Length: 69
Image (cartoon, rainbow, N blue to C red; front, top):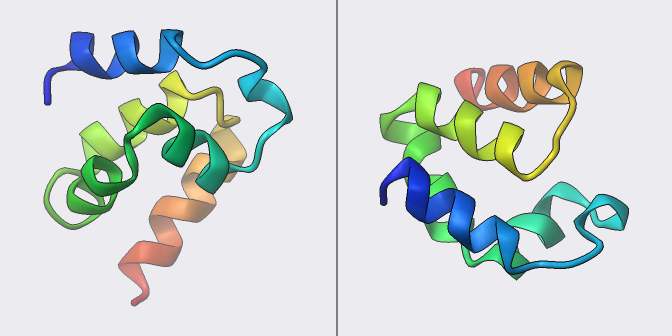
């Protein structure tokens, strides 16, 4: 999935700010893409999290937790 496709998916969801990270990923249809990127492409996983509005401190924790698994 390209960065543009990711951005386009996120733009279709309203009131994303009040959702959890998992809810945001699900509502945007990005759960599978994000899970794949966590294993194969950390930079893209970071991009997805930023695009859905996750703050930088939380992004760092999410990516570090994945590395510890």
